[in-house]
Structures are given as structure tokens and as C-alpha cells.
Amino acid sequence: MKAILGKKIGMTQIFDPTGNAVPVTVLEVGPCPVIQRKTQENDGYLAVQLGFEEIGEARAKKIVTKPRRQHFGKYGKPIFRYLKEVRVDNLEAFGDQVTVNIFDGVTKVDVIGTSKGKGFQGCMKRHNFNGGPAGHGSKVHRRPASTGTTQMGSLPGGKKPGQMGNARVTALGLTIVRLDAERNLLLVKGSVPGPNGRLVTVRESGRK
Image (cartoon, rainbow, N blue to C red; front, side, top):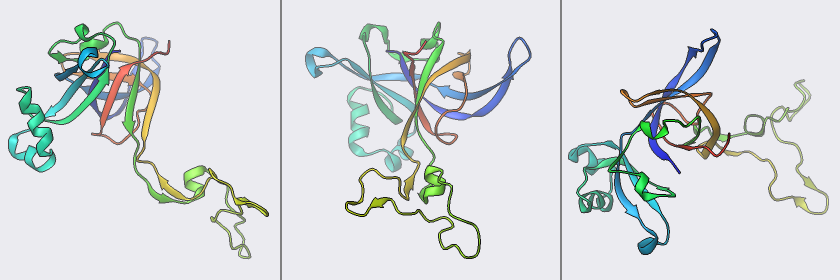
């Protein structure tokens, strides 16, 4: 499986050959050096560890743990802000560094990111409930109504108020609109989870 790390830059639009506006998300992906290789003999599976966004020693002491910094030193690599392991089918397909060119000839990708955190929210915002009557006599304008039964009470798995967002989200089958190897940019059609500047993992999609 082809995969690389990057970050979300933002959304814009470009025009296709017929003049139609296409909404796209701009991703800055790579270059990602290969820090470590996991083999079937030593680890029981095939994977590579990729680093992204190199940082200086002073900054690293503030945001990167000491074991993580020693891990980079063990393999003779500079310190990177992000380190992520991705499963692969063939280790020989990965050199010392992975760039956006890994997606040459690929038409669709999956983008994995963390959605925006919304904090504690009620049912209307979190689950799109309609809400109660808006008149003065009502006392349940935005509160959830009864969610249980007379005999069993509230059932598990019901839609309740709670933490919204800040969860792992995968956007499946996004079409690659443009690949800019010179600036390490990948433009995909549609939206990508998370705010601008947040880490994303881009992998080749199994969808056609």
C-alpha cells in the first residue's frame, strides 16, 4: 500500500478543461524519510516508519519526548515532529525517502485525519435533533426528550449530549485533481477532515 504523511493547507477551487469550478483541498505531503523498517522476520509484519516536518534540537526538547528523540538518533536521523507507522505490502518499493511522486498514476486516495473538536454539545448540534416547541409554554426547546422505556430505562448506544469531534475520520475515495512534485502539493477533490495545518495520512484508495 502506498502512503505518505502531510498536512492540510486549506481549500480552494480550480477549473477543469470544460470551465467548471472544482472544489479542492490542498495538501502538503512529504518529503517523508523512512526512519525504520519492520520486517516479517523480526516483527511479524511489514511496515515502515515515516517522519514528517523536521524540527531543531531546541524545539524538539519542548514538544518531542526523550524516548522519541533517542529513537531518531538510533537510526541516525534528524528529529521530526511527527512519526507514524504505515503497513506496506513490499518494503522494496520504499527507498530512503517518500515523496508525493509515490502517487504517480494513482487516481484516488484515502485521507485520514482528526476532525475539529467541538467540545461538549447537545443533541441538536451533535445528532441533528429537531428540538422541542419554540413557544413560551414549552420547557424543552433544545433538551433531549425521553430516550428510555418504562421497564428498561435508557438503552445503551442511544444518542445523547456529549463530546463532539476530535475523532479519527477517514475520507474515502477522493479523486486526485493535481500533483505538484516541485512544491510537494497534492490537490484532491472535496473536503478533508480537520483544521488547516493538522497532520493527515494519505494512502492509495481501494476504491475505483
